[in-house]
Image (cartoon, rainbow, N blue to C red; front, top):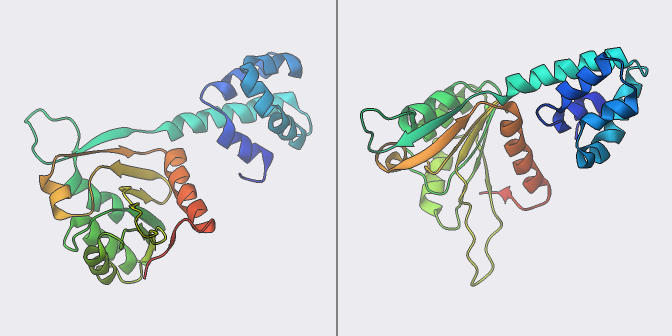
Length: 240
């Protein structure tokens, strides 16, 4: 969690909570009374963080109301847009975007880093070509792969994307089966593309696949944080 109480509060508040608290404080309601705008279980959870945030502003309730209003506005912007993304046969009235076009477009917009995951892969897919372009622009690229079950494809991917970082689950114990089966792309912690489609030509173009493009910082950042936590705890290791 972010160390400053106000930044942490922005991560913890649910939609509508900041608005309700800000309105109560702006009307001059006493602090204990204003807290009643939150559900009881949320009040118990957030009260220590709220009070630290208020203290960081010198106890000024009107200033805290203004900050809460800003957090609420930022949260509304962050909720962003969600689009459907399809592969395969497409009726004339289909709603959504094409996986083939989207995969490259999203990765090509990366300025800082890409975190992605796939089970199977073909080196000629639009995903792989876009990841190669990203590393050529000095974008940090991390890809979760499954060499345990897709060794040939993973080797081709690693050769096609020089400079990328590749992570895997630890090797399976004898007689066990577990696979790295997630499929997603996160760009700059701002956009997340979560899909059934692997990084293969067939999945991008011919198979019937469905995904969602989520333009929400909170969602994108949570995926990156989850991956980082798995690495820190040894649940993902370097693939070689």
